[in-house]
Image 1: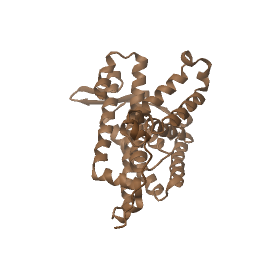
Image 2: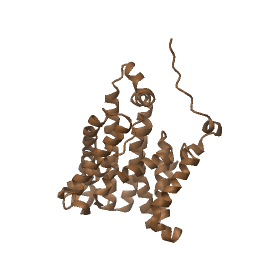
Image 3: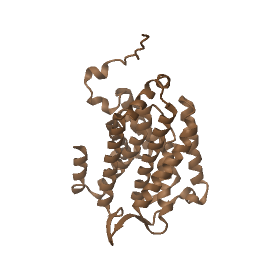
Image 4: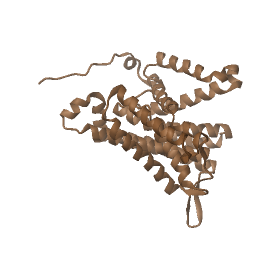
Amino acid sequence: MAAVALALLPAVLTPYTHDLVVKITLYAIFALSLELLVGMTGLVSLGHAAFLGIGAYVTVLASGDGAGSALRLLPMAMGASALYALFVGALSLRTKGVYFIMVTLAFAQMAYFVFHDTQLGGGSDGIFLYGKPVIEFGGATWLDLDNKTHLYYTVLGALVFTYGLLALIRRSRFGHALAGIRVNEQRMRAAGFQTYLYKLAAFVIAGALAGLAGFLLASKDAAVNPELLSWHESGAVLLMLILGGIGHLRGAVIGAAAFMLLREFFQTEGLVGPLASHWQMTLGFTIIAFVALLPKGLIGMAMPRRRRAAPARPLEVRHD
């Protein structure tokens, strides 16, 4: 129902709200990719923005001076992000807890400085996309991401695909294994599961989905800069999950929408006056209030009251 409602929205959207909805949808895809790690596997990463930025940069660099084929650029963007995720995951997954968080942050900062301090990606100013991706067949253009309507429905289709894929993963044997790893990895190893390979697979899939968001973001803005890979972006997407409710696919989407709308609200001088120049502070206080009042996130408001109030049950250990 939500997807159908979003599909009908362009008929009533202004150019400003159209751009805002596309941006929210993009970041919902990005948040869902991190949900696979944090909510489904129990891996808190502070370097997830690296895969978003790599996907965006590869899209622009591989396009050249004209409009490239989306059928070529999309696999390249997702493949590059997945490849870097494979490299990062193969090393960082040998650590746990706060060490894992810091290692992922370190790898993301390495990628950030590669694009920031070299001419590979235009330095600190970034680079521009001269022609947005298209799909041409038989002399006709079937998809042109320079067309706002085409871009809108492409981004919406990508969100539905990402949500559906993660829903299928959650219900699969692979998803149940990830849930077991999140609860008790030692017990899963004792049961014969190669937990390292399961976590690495989840890490690579999450990186590829973040690369999908990067491809769409580059196609929307027609420009990329190193800030896409910064730890600020990684922290922002983690806040989206916390705000929406970790452990729920709907929570990732709701959290992305709430975060982007709150940020847009606090940046609008016509609504908050002089506080617009200090939007980070007001947004921070607002998120703190949400977390304090809704520890399960916004998705927790839809849960039955008894379920929200019930204390967490300890893991039962049987010795028979």
